[in-house]
Every structure is written in structure tokens, then in C-alpha cells.
Image (cartoon, rainbow, N blue to C red; front, side, top):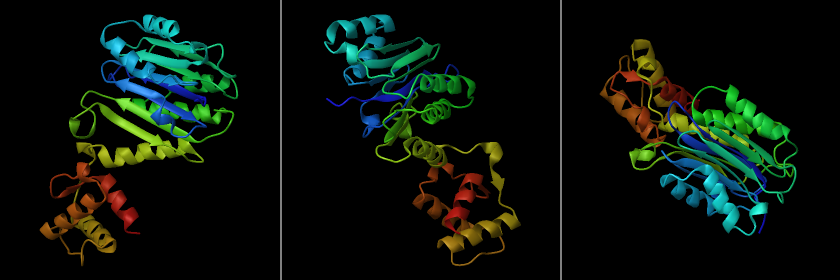
Length: 287
């Protein structure tokens, strides 16, 4: 079995209750192995010759009210290769636990505190974990951005000493998935890339663009000047034959067609107004 040598941070947002995992490694498709989470229950990173049963077993145990310490004890008692394993656990109350087996490849270790657990193996040194923790604690904003910022700091501090290949971000929220049908609010993976953490950050920005609803206070009224500007963009992008002096049904239909092709339906609003993010994307496409 090839070692999943990696660094990760598992965390909870005390304001929203969101739970998440961010991870990076010199390993193909780390997101298919390391992160597990369930909204309202907990989150797990399992790595270093990863025992992938630890993810679902942790979630099942947490549903039954079992503590993180008892979960760790069960793993130690039932896994003959437990000394090779590494994992971080955070429950829905912010309790945390991190474990690094004595047989993990150095440098290996972890740190945990309220609402987070950070761990890694085959790292350049302890400064990687220090960067993960410090950046996570000092960064404000949504959990996803805090996790990616922490991952980037760990990467900049040295990361996996073998190099870079993949990264992943998983954030769960009750009914947070597409259409509200599941809890996978964010599930982004960079499976094979020269700069996977940078690419993960780009994907997070793209997800925000495509799936976030616009803030009502940010919407722009389409006055005469803006009507001309938007229509000229739609003409250049091939959605409108010519620009008119006013905003009409023809222009609105063209804008909706553009949004449909670009997967921006979540950002469409009532006729006569436009999300500035849609405007900015239109002008990028229309260059």
C-alpha cells in the first residue's frame, strides 16, 4: 500500500455549524481518500497508509454519541497497522482530536484545539502544522476560505517534502448541496496539478461565482448607461444582434440566454437589475 503522505486541517465554523476538511499531498486524487464529513455530525481526515474505514466509522460513532477519545481507542484496538495511521477528527460541538502513529514517516505530527485539528506526515518540518494552525485561527470569513488559506500557508511553509500533486476541499452544511438535496455544500478536488493548492483556490472562486446567490444590496439598476454597456457586451459575446437605447424584453432574453450557457442562473434577478458579478463575467467573455 502506498502511503498517503499529506497535510490536512479538519474544522468547524462555530457561527454557521459548517464542518470541513482541506488537504493536499504528493499523491494522486487525495480528495478521494482523505476527507469525510456529515453535516451536524463531524468531519474526518484519514491519512498515512490511510485506513479509509475510519471516515465512515467515525461518522457512525458520532451519530451514536460516542466521544472522539473512545473512537480513537476503538481504532487503536482493532487496526493492526494503527502505528502507521494518522487522522484528525472534529465533531459538531467543536471537540477535536488528532493522532499520529509512531511509524508515520517523518516529519509527522499534529495539533488540535477548539474547532480544529491539523496534521501531516512526510512534511518538511513542524513549521507546516504551525502555518496551518496560525493561518486558520487568524483568518476571518467563511469556513471554506479559512481552510484554503490555511492549506496555502502550509504549502508555502514547505508542505509535503516530496512535492505537490493534488488538493481537495470538502465543506458540509444541512441541505447545503445543489438543490438542497444533500449536505455537500462544497466538494472540490484537484486530482493532478503542478500547483494544486492554487488551483483549488481558483475553483473555490469559480464555485462562488456560479452557485452563490447575489446580495440584494449589491444589485445594479439597469439605467440608460448600463443598458448600453450590458447590451454591447451581449453583442460582442454573440447573444444580441445590436444594442438599443433602452433595456427591453429582447435584451433581457439575451441576458438570460448568456446566463444559461455560463451556468449563472443562480445569479439572475428580476428584470431591470443585474448582479455585478454577472456583468463582470459578461465583460470578460466579451473581450
